[in-house]
Image (tube, rainbow, N blue to C red):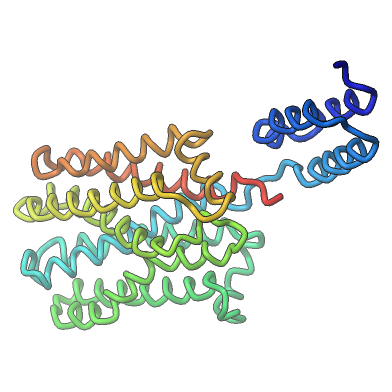
Amino acid sequence: MRPGPAGRLSRVLVGCHPRRWRDRYGEEMLDVLDQHRPTARTVVNLWASAAALLSYDIGHRAPWDWRVSLYTWTKGVAAGAYLVAVLGVLAGHLSWHSVLAVWAAPLIAAAFLAATAGLLVWDLEHPGRFVYILTRPQWRSWLVRGGVILTGYAAVLGVHLLGSVTGSAGLRQAAAIPGVPLAALAAVYTAYLFAQAKARDLWQNPLLPAHMLVQAGVAGSAALLLAAVWWQPRAAGWLEWVLLGTCAAHVLLVLGEAGIGHPTEHARLAVHELTRGGLARVYWAGFGLVAAGIAAPAAGAWVAPLALAGLAAYEHAYVQAGERVPLA
């Protein structure tokens, strides 16, 4: 039976909805219209639905761009290099007088921490007001807490390097006491910053702090492995096993993130964007490159740059996926 005027107009109005809505609900809505006789009330409801969705479905620039993705990566290297080196000393694989512990780890950490601070300031809407984070803090904000953590971590690195310049192992050891927890906090606080974006369900993952600590382990062990090849080759074997372990942990966490069910539609759409949508190539390329780090004990240090590049790709995809899903 041919549809009446209300039926034809209803079908036109279905086509007026945003593309994302049509892709998800369009066929189902047309089947409903075929099974039931549309009325004037149906037309009004579809018109109101299309108007509301088109009003909300306005393109917008993601507030956090590549600078935030890169900042999470540089911060991971800065935190991980120091953590891995100090824990290596405590485990007996390095000494307080080794080149990696005296110079390589603190210099790598300081350089990448400086890059992190630069990216953090650059990403602010008003970079000149960065000082307000410390002088007029809003303590409930993890941006403020993170700024304090990074400042404290920078001070620790300064004390450690002072001990390196003066040849004081005791000063380096004293710096490590607050340095280890501050480095760990520097690695994970961004997870709590992301979680404060309550409307972004992908970032509400309770495992995100642990995952960011693992990512710091990947970044730190890869960076130190490259340094060890040049300055302390005997430490390379131990760092290859650290890289294997952290890369394997990252791979398992990523597979869990991609494979398990998610409690909200917003989170499911974000994961779909990561695994099958516009970010899938970057996401899975990053996954594969980090997975290559598992071969470090057999393949050697050449996989370290692959792991670092893969981690950067993964973090970029993850940050962008949280913002790709429209809020309405």
